[in-house]
Structures are given as structure tokens and as C-alpha cells.
Image 1: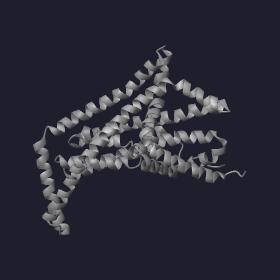
Image 2: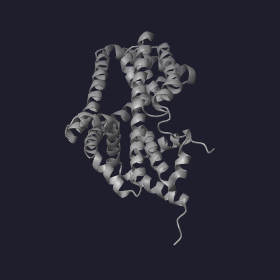
Image 3: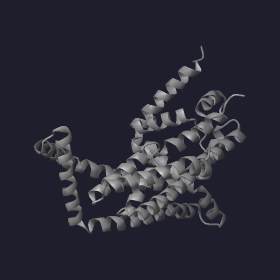
Image 4: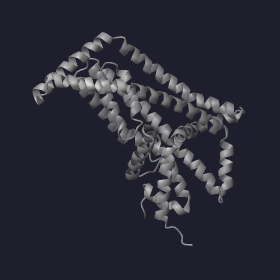
Length: 340
């Protein structure tokens, strides 16, 4: 019987993987996030285990750190939104003023009448109203998936020794299996820890810059922009766009928008050339071509959730390929190492 050529085998594996990821996303997305949370919290869990706590108690205490971070985040976010909603008349006046300015600009520059603009606005508002239920459904689904991923994280931490032993039992080379488990976990843990730290620094830098520039609701805008930077490549653009829209809607000027772009651009240069190389480094060891392809691929299959976890998951997968002789060429294709 002829052996299947490796390129064809890899192509078949990719097709099968995409099919499984797409149709099993309801189960796999929370499970993937649960595994990532478990890897991220493993050092904390290990220290609690060393104190003699029962394994599920230490797992629950470890996962509660994530709940604490989420609580702090939403407390700060809620405080800023509260301030925003406490001035409804000012916001209404600002939106009315900006709408009038936009209508005048469109008529003067492009000859678009106010009636046509009003028709477009009416249709857009109808679309927003018709999509409200789907947005609420998506938000509820995301919250449910988040809670489910925390439950998975507790279970994975509680049974981590059993899972490790299972990997060792099914592997012919136990030493290689142990190295693979440790290194893949470290890749995810170091990447996410570094990314969280960089995001926190960005949030502080944005907030300080916006406050010094006199931008209204500086903390709210800083949180929006920094959190969305977790989405590779396009997150900063989305965060900057939302910050500018909120600024204009709350009475900000074009000068404020330009200041936001200037502050975010300076912070992004610092992140790209100083913070990310220094804090994150080459933890995932993926070349730029493969990194972009994996982000786009995961986004197409899993949406926004896929774009967030694409790099750490693919980095862990590369470690597995590195340790498997048959797929070592694929690991070389994914990585940054050059042949000497």
C-alpha cells in the first residue's frame, strides 16, 4: 500500500480541522478559552497546590483572579459610562450639531440634499432597531461562553495531572511528550501574560495622554482602545475609530480627534518597537506571514473570539510540530528560524 504524500496529508488535515472547528465552535471556543485560562493561571494554581489545598479548591481560587480582574474592569468602565449617561441633553445637542454640520458639508461638497441624508439616516436607524435583538442575543451568548470557559478552566486545572499522565501514556517517547506539554503551556502563558501587561500599559498611556490633552471621558476611551488592541492588527484601528466617534458624539472637535490619533500613534510606535519586543519577545516564534494567515483563518472560522486566541493556539501547535519528526518541516515553515 502506497504512503500518502506528506503535502496531501497536511492538506487533508487542514480541511478536516477547519470543518471540525467551524461546526464544533459552540463547544470548542469556550473549551479553547478555558484551556488558555488554565495555562495562564497554572503557576498560581501550582503554588496553591503546594500549600496543601485540595486541587479543586486551588483551581477555584485561581480562576477567581479572572473574575476579580473582570469586576475591576467593569467597575471602572461602568463609572465612566455613568458619567457619560448623566449628561443626556449635552450629548443630544452635540449629536444634533454634528449632524447639521455633516449635512452642510455633504451638500456643499457633493451636492447631496438634506432629504437624501435624512432618508439614509432613517434606513440606518431601522436597520439598527431590527438588529437589536440579534446584538442582545450575541452579547448573552458571549457572556454564557465566558462563564462556560471559566468552568472549563476550573475542571482542566483540577484534572491537569490526569491529562498530563494521559499524554505520557499515549506517547512512545515520554521525555519528548513531557517537554511538549511544558513548552506549549509556557508559550501560551508567556504570550498572554505579556499581552495583558502591554494592554495595561497602553490603557494607562492612553488615559494619561487623553487627560493631558483635555479629551472628555478620557478613561472610558482609553479602556476601549486598549482592550480592543488585544485583537491583532486591526484592534487598534477599531479602538481608535470608536474613541473618535464617542468624542464627536459628546461634543468633541476635530482637534480632539486629531489629538486622539496622535496620542494613539505614539503609543503604538512605543508598543511595536519597545514594549512588545521587550515584554513578549518571540514567545510564539511565528513568522509574520504565518501569523497573519492564522489570525485571518481563525477569524473566518470563529469570528472575533478566533482572532484573539489565534496566535497563542498556533504558537502551541508549532511547539507540537517541532517535537514531532514527521511535521518538523511544517514547524519550520511556520517559524522564524533560518536554515544555516
